[in-house]
Length: 132
Image 1 (spheres, rainbow, N blue to C red):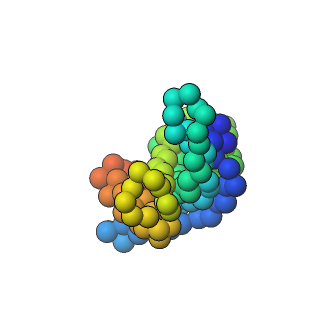
Image 2 (image 1 turned 90 degrees about the vertical axis):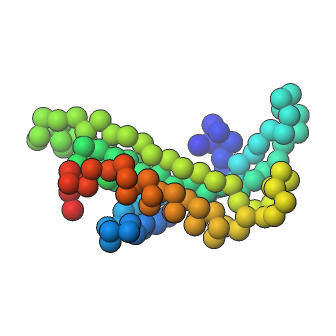
């Protein structure tokens, strides 16, 4: 994320509740991001950013890089399988942005991301495969 202009990353975990009662833990990153306002990259603005991410394997959903790596190594050795993880990441800016008439609060940003992901997870995951 630093290569995309993100600085001052602060990580925490967020539990999302799906409509069927399932819970999914995702990683939440709060950062500020330096954005170019022109193609010549002479004018910049700093914006606040929220990012939620997690990994989806064959039968698992994980929100931690190290845990995913450990599970991947174990599955290759013990189960003889490659999870072929998908990385799911969604972001939104919040705060004062000159291209919007009204500010978006951090709480609104969290709500936007959690609502989007709960809908996505409900329809895109084969829950019969996911370990409990």
